[in-house]
Length: 99
Image (cartoon, rainbow, N blue to C red; front, side, top):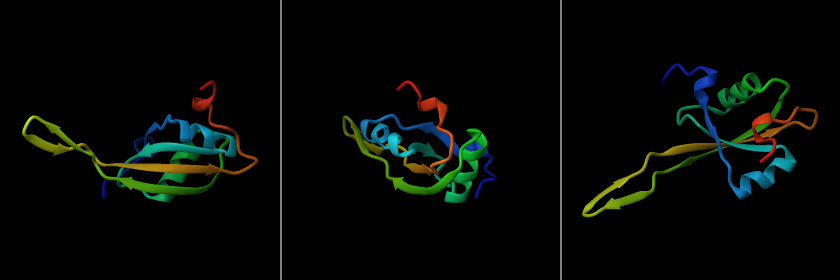
């Protein structure tokens, strides 16, 4: 396993209708590094966004989709998605404000 720093773990936020509806319950969704564990994701969110306290982390591995160009078939890259639940007294994450 690679030596992951906290800034390498979170790739980008997931902006979908379903993930936006979870924000009112303080649930935020991120694409994360495929080798990151739940404790590493928790530490990365608390370090990157000051004032946040993570209650729990749910992760899911997403396989790549099959794609075809002519006769050649292949797969897109696999991903890992994390849903982070913050505590009630935690501060909100600012990158999702105004969306």
